[in-house]
Image (cartoon, rainbow, N blue to C red; front, top):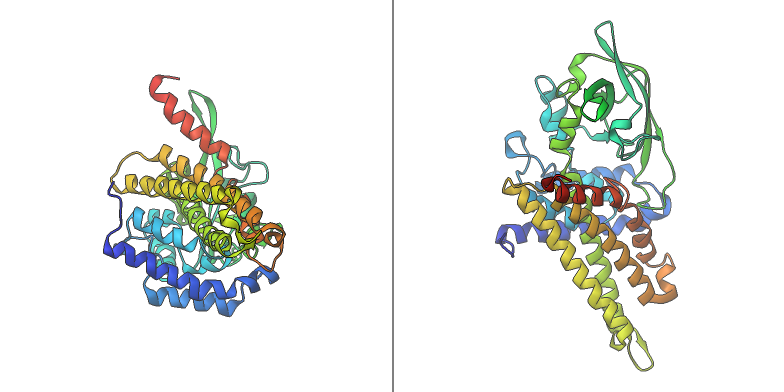
Length: 386
C-alpha cells in the first residue's frame, strides 16, 4: 500500500468535502429540528450530485458509474461522513448488489438506479433476526408458478424514498454438516406491488431525518423475473456484494470524527480559563492527542482494507477490524469533545450532542461490534483448525 494520495484522489477528497460543506451543512439544523428532508432540498442535492458526476460513483463505468476504485470510494464516503446522513443519502450510492441484475432487470432496475431515476433500499433485518441472517422468518413459497412473500422487515434505511426494495427472504432449507440451514433468495420488489406495504418505523435518537422503515409482505405475489441472482443463492449474493457496507460505516465514522476533532481542537485553543487556553492544561491536551491518534489509526485501517479489495486480496478480517475500531473510536472522540466543551457541549445550540447521539448506532448496524469481533477471531483461528 502506498501512503499518500494521487493528485486525482486529492481532487476527489476536495470536491466532495466542498460539496458537503456547501450543500449539506446549511440544511442540517432544519433536518435535525424537523426530522424531515424537504422534497425540494433532496431533489436539489441529487441534481447537483449528478451534475458533479458523482452519482453512483461506486458503480463501474461500463454501466454509467464513475468507476472509482474501492479506495477512492472510501475517500468519498469518508468526506460524506462529515455531513448529515439524511441529507447525504441523496448524494446517491445505489446498492452494488444491483450488479447481479440480469436480462430485463438491467434496464428496469440497474440502469435507472445508476442514472438517479429510481432509488433502492436493502431489506434484511427482521424483528426476531438481526445479525442472525439465517434465522429470518420472512418467507417466499411457490404457488402456481409465482413466489408468494409473507413476513416483516424492520430498520430498513432509505425505504421511505425507495422506488423498489432489494429483499432477502427464506425459500426453504438445506442440510449441511452443521445441520439444517435456511436457503436465502433475493427479490426485487417495486413500491406499490399488491401485498407490499412500507410504513414508518421507530423514532431513533441517531441520525434524525434518516428514517428507518417497516416493510410488510402479506401474500405478495412475484414472478420468477423478480429473483435477483439464483434461487437459494441469496446468501452467496450477500457475501459477494455487501462486504463493502462495513467499510462505508468505518469511513463515515472517520469523517465524522475529523469534523468533531476540528471543533474541539479550535475550541481548546480559543477557550480560556485561569488566564490561558484550556488546551494548555494536560487534561485537555492529552484528550486531543489521544483523539487524533485514534482517528489517524482508524483512517489507515479503513483505507488499507479498501486497498486490499482493489488488489484482489482477502479483506474480510481487515474490513471487520476497520468497522470495529472506527465506530468505537467515534464514540470515544465525540464523548471527549463534549467533555472539553463542558455543559455547552450538551446544548443543541452546538452540533456536538447530535454527533454524540449519532455515533451510538454505528456500533450496531451493518454488524454489531460483537459480530465484528467474531469475524476477526474466526479468521484468526480457522487456519489453525480451531
